[in-house]
Image 1 (cartoon, one colour):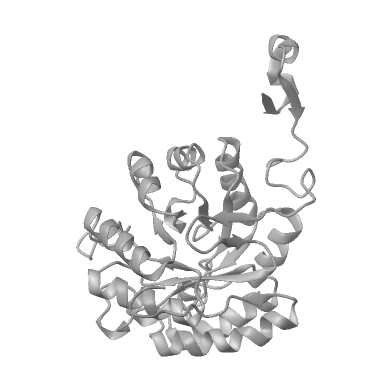
Image 2 (tube, rainbow, N blue to C red):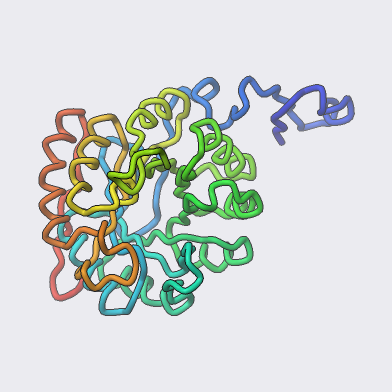
Length: 311
């Protein structure tokens, strides 16, 4: 057993207990810090095809903001797989600002995601908002996403820390890098080492984009933590025509991959259609990413060959 923290609070009983190692924290977030872990963490996502986040290959998670129907999510899954995405993103439960906006399909959406995974072969990434639903979603999803609004939802962080599913942790809208690392530390401290950090843009005074993509955060996180880092150019841009440029910038800055919103018919999307790429636009962006990845020593997954609706 290992106890990490202020050695003054450990007490002589804990310190003298057989089999207990008391380590004094050398930083506010020792478990995710580069200080104690020089080797970078590679997070392995379960599935038909092995997905390693933080390795030599750039990873791209792609799919719609919300699961809207079986046909929509399956069509999108097959489309992004053909272009080289390695995982399917899609929200079954949606934390919408307005209580009158589409809140997701819930359990029905999880069933459609599972069907899309079976047909496309892509592991699924979906958001969890309620600590009470962590166990249920961990049974269905391959990666649990903690959205920006929930980055400091500590009961939720504790719960995802207790399950053995990779966690995609998005930076809060106004969170500092230190606060993001402390949120990650909370998950790891509960026993789950599979944390993937995500820079998705922060709120600033600028109104030209939905949020401001903090490209410098990629370099800072890589310097201060051993955890892999993705970027979300869709939520940063808020406009689909800007997404490819931000994606290229993130890869050039050293990100381990992307999570991108893609919809088979963006103009009909129930949520965030303005920032979702169409399938042809996503395919074109992936082709532009390949030479940029090679320039920084990273390869991009080859497109998945899909025949007869099966990957």
